[in-house]
Image (cartoon, rainbow, N blue to C red; front, top):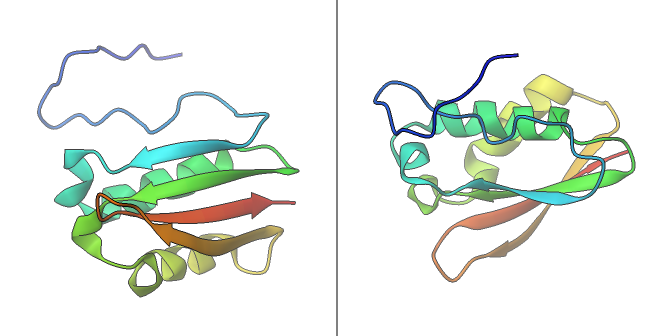
Length: 106
């Protein structure tokens, strides 16, 4: 297993999670590195879902820089998960401008 430094090295972005969550949880995709890199946000959102066990959900809290997740994130989720037992719903816009999408894993 690789270890991750807590230093902020340019060019390296820590994953949104490094463990499997056997509970419902929230993935913080509002950090500054996500503002400049939508593909990183999409990749980490997918990884967060893949690290959530069946019967739980993960709240994807997305960066405000990309607008409503319906305009970009839903397509990435459809492409990765298709008609599987992964379903999502828009919850709300945060006071800081980001958005919350709740993804249920059945």
